[in-house]
Length: 149
Image: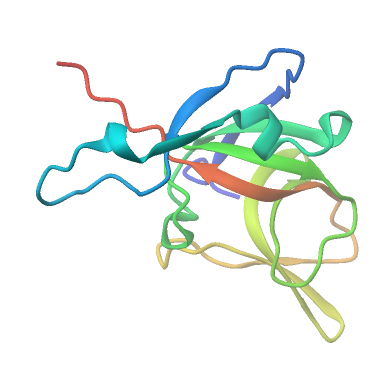
């Protein structure tokens, strides 16, 4: 893996705090303005809605662009559920030969691949002598766009 690959900062899910925020269910217009307060019908709690199993859920900050074509970008926050055996095609946090990486897992006959979703990065073939641990499957990617005025 190159130093340009995705790097992750892992954080355990803290689910003992609940914050219920208004949810504009009708959506927010990206064109002409609409009175959003007319559409606020329920509240959302990200712990309740994103963390179904607190003991097996953790978060990770993304540092890198190898998964950008799957909509996972530098600075995004991932919600990850521990799963040692991923399904074919899952996007997973993997620990390969002493380094974390975020890739799509592809099982192909007698081969296992870790696939980036950015053509600037090469697929990684996992060989029998490689040390691979799948830490978990990505459940959600949250783009935390922040603009300082």
